[in-house]
Amino acid sequence: MKVTLLLTASSLAAAGVLETRQRATPKFESLVASPNAPRVHATSKRTLTSYGPFILPASKGGAAAGGGGMGMGDSTLGGTSFMLNMEKGICSDKTNGPCTVFGGNVSVYFEDGRKATPADGIYIHHLLTTDRTKKATNFLSACDNPTRAGMSVSGFGGTGFVGVGEDSGEEPVLYTQRDGQSKAGYWVAENDKFMANVVLVNYNKEQKSVTVKYDLEWSPTPPPANTRGMLVSISQCPGKGSIKMSPSGPANSTSGKFTFLEDGVILAARGHLHDGGSQVAMYVNNKPACASKATYGGKESTTEVGGTKWATISSMSYCDGPIPIKKGDQMHLVVEYDLKAHPLRKSADGHDATGVMGMMSVTFASSAKDF
Ligand SMILES: [Cu+2]
Image (cartoon, rainbow, N blue to C red; front, side):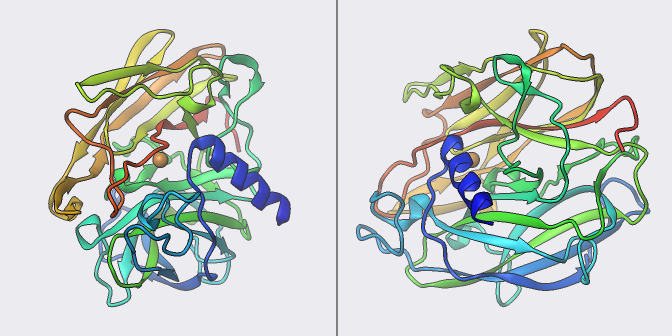
């Protein structure tokens, strides 16, 4: 466990996440049927799994409120970090699995069952889930190193699972095609152990207790092809990791090359950005494959911080597959930030957020049955 935690801390540091001190230990609370219909396959199950409570300290502008993140003042920049061990709750309340997950997203709720959004002063800094048991081979190489297997930012020595930031909105991470034309999905074996790194921000002057809910669409039967997701970041590219930003308008940063290590198909992809970002474009063999674009604001994602209106990034559009891939194909990302259109997120005491990100979450199935 110690090794896992160390890996986690260094991976997050590499990804530019500000870690803050860990708090109490949230636990599995409940698994219930979702009131909403499945999103991809009408015959799937859709469930809500709750973990909690997550106690978020009050925001105190200026003085560090319970671990302000490397002495950067208020806790609203770095947020509060939790390590969640998930022994059960993924498709079952007795254990995890067995099931094929087609997609899922995670949201935060107050104890009275109301959704906790940026409009309520609650912001999802990061939520990265790892299937610690599943050892999947990575289909992309390390950046600019075509012969070495790459790493998912959400891997942590296992396999990355449903992860979100505030930019994921209500739309799920997909492990299959969005149009329902593929039965491929992410296979969770019985008793797989999951872990999540949950980083939440509380802008309120009072402590808040919240619950995190995984909204998963799944089937109990094994998939015809077991899909894998990788979350790759421009920060993984030696010498190309810094993201350019300009107060006067759009600025682009181009990643190095990630090489596909096997034949297969991209079933879905979606970018991850922080406030300030406008799009992540994906290129395959130097040709544009798609662009995942940011949307800002909306009722749940607009509020005020320090007297200034703040419309946070509320969703990223999908790159829909299938995109056929041959071994040796190369992918790169072009990340665009536009601080004129969208300012950086601010802490309650007025500091700009640092460590912005430019990532792409890619869901892949090999043409062989990788199962
Ligand atoms: Cu991020």
